[in-house]
Structures are given as C-alpha cells and as structure tokens.
Length: 104
Image 1 (cartoon, rainbow, N blue to C red):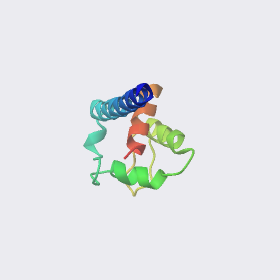
Image 2 (tube, rainbow, N blue to C red):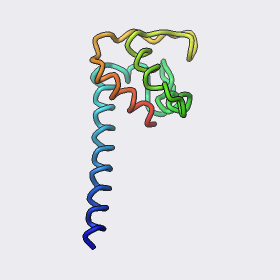
Image 3 (cartoon, rainbow, N blue to C red):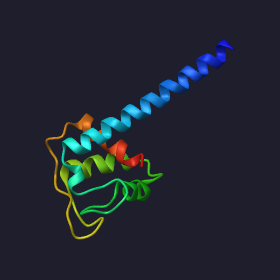
Image 4 (spheres, helix red, strand yellow):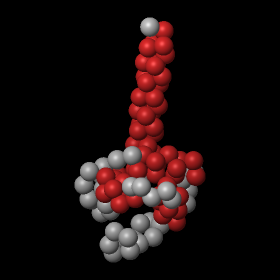
C-alpha cells in the first residue's frame, strides 16, 4: 500500500509539473504578443502551434531551431510572412515558450 501511495504521489507531481509548464508557456505567449499572430489550433497570421509541433515532431534539434527562429526571426518556412525577431525575450523564457509550442 505504501508503494502505491508513492507512485500516486509521483504521478501527481508529474501532472502538476506539466500543468505548470503549460501555464508558463501560455503566459509567456501572452506576455510577448505571440498570440497576435499565432493560435493553438488555427492559422492566424502565422501557423498554429499544433502545426508547428507536427512539423518538428521527432526532430532532435527542434527546440534549438525554434529558439533561434523566435529570437532572430526569419521567413520562408510557412509562407511569405516573416517571423519578426524577439531579441528581448530571455533565453530561459524562449526555451520554456518553445517547449510549450512543441507540446501541442
């Protein structure tokens, strides 16, 4: 019975950690104006987060690629509209934001 309690407690912590990461990612997207061009499940100006996650699924370097793209901007991947640079977002926040996008 004691081991079951430990397993349930660990599962609860994992679920809480995932929920906090989701909240942090969404909060960063809101704070940095990402939702002006992106939505979780539909194209706005830029691609949906679900489409981005699907495109980069299984790529070991996806997080690094997207952190660079968000920080420096760029174009040509999703059409003619370029992604503006976001150099003022802290690197740690960029990683949190990108992990959140990739979790969709």
